[in-house]
Image 1 (cartoon, one colour):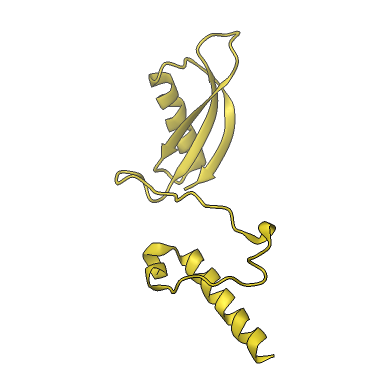
Image 2 (cartoon, rainbow, N blue to C red):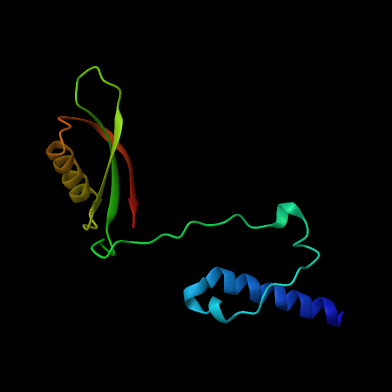
Length: 116
């Protein structure tokens, strides 16, 4: 019972440190030890891509994806615009204006709007 509890605590500590990432305390962690669960191939975690924002990127706002075309009978393509506005309507208007400035005269519809 004691060994199961200590093993559980070690596994949970490693998972918390992995979640926190290397910049939030993961650099001081001890090397990983193999556990019975880690030996299974399906239990190995997939590598995660780090999400980083550029220095000028807004900290709050919306990402708007529009279906746009340059010709009337052309296939729709996706145009993505990041707005610092928290209003969906204002962000959509900014995205449509940016799409026109980028050379897409035909704006089809809004595909997706998500918060940053």
